[in-house]
Length: 259
Image 1 (cartoon, rainbow, N blue to C red):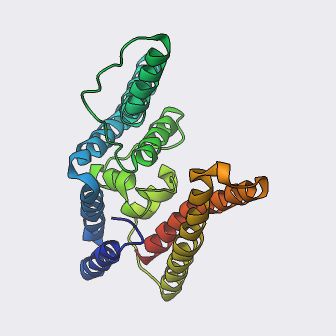
Image 2 (spheres, rainbow, N blue to C red):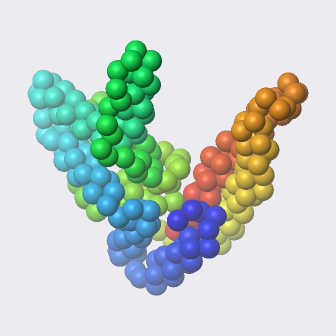
C-alpha cells in the first residue's frame, strides 16, 4: 500500500473518520489497529517480527530500569536486545546477498554453488522500526529516558503507520510525549498537514518518478551515452533519491498533523 496509491488514500480517509469519531482515550487504539492493518497489507506474516521487536524492547526497557544499579546485568540486557534486533534485521536484509556472494566466490575458485533452498523476502520498513526500537533501549541504558509502562502506547510508537515504511525515524521522548497526551487538531494544523502532504506528493510523483525515468534509461545502457549524459543521469538519480525520501517524509509529517 504505497502512499501514492488510491488504496492508501481510501485507507487514510477511513482511519481519519474513525479517529475523529471516537473519544480521545480510544484514539491510540485506533491508530495502533490501523498501523498493524497497514503493515499487514504488505504481508501479514511479517507482523510477527514487529510484534517480537516491540515486546522484546518494551520488557528490556523495564528491566534495564529495574537493574540500573547492576551494571553487569544491565549490559547483558542491552547486548541481548541488540543481538536479537540486529540479528533479525541482518538475516532478512543480507541473507540473500550473503548466499549470492558466496556462490560468486565459489564459481571463481571452481567449487559448486550452494543450493539456496529458501528465498528470503525483505520485510517492509524493518530497518526503520528496528533502529527506532534500538534507540529507545539505548536511551534507557544511558538513563536519558524512563521506560514506557504502557505496552499499547509503546507498540504505537514502534509501528505508527505514517513513518513506518520510509521514516523519518523518531526518538522516543519526542513521539511518546505526543502519543500519551490528549490531542486536539486545530485548523492551522489541518492546513499545514494538507500542505505537507501535497508538497510530499509533488516531490514523489512529479520530481522523483520523472527523474527515475531518466536515470533508468542512462544506467540500463551506459555504453550508449556520452560522459555529459552520464553526469545528467547521476544528477537525475540524486534528485530521484531526494524526491523519494523527502516526499515520503513530508507526506508522513502531513498525515501526522491530521491526527
